[in-house]
Image (cartoon, rainbow, N blue to C red):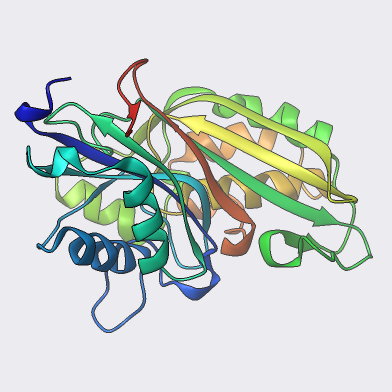
Length: 271
């Protein structure tokens, strides 16, 4: 890429969500976007406006959130390592600068994303989780991960996901003439060992997500995993197009924005 042409700076960040009202700026409240805009505007010595791959709610964590902003030809000469160190120094301890990338001019972390992946952690059984306490939902009964996985497959493909969207958000989208249809390409539920603790993981990949969509999917699947509902109920809830037909919204602390995919070659390490 010719540095004289300008480019797009893309920053891969992770964060622990407990201390934020979510990604998006809210007046008078602490947000991930607000902290990143402050860090970048301080380093670049100018106002910045960021594009992000997926806005997270209060309490939701991230490992691979991507934010982008256009940079000038002069800024293209910045050294990547120095930029990474500078942004790390300018951000609080609950945000991690995990990568600095260069993309062509006009690239958007939001609009160029091809898929997003979320991972939800569940600690089940009577024993209180230890290291997973702050990033898992403690369900005080055992859940059947295989039954959850079987039920989840009904959600694969492009569907109307109104049953899995926060009611006022769905209403607002429809008032604006926007769709509540989304396409899920994969969803898996399985048991894993993390730091000596057994957890149930629900991992969902799709082109985009509605407000609270993953958390409602998880809350619905846990009803199946507990044996409170049959596997067929998930497909029935999906077909109802009614939020009241699905299960509860799982707590925010168990959810992590795990990955975002772009076209191969879209991002290059900022040297």
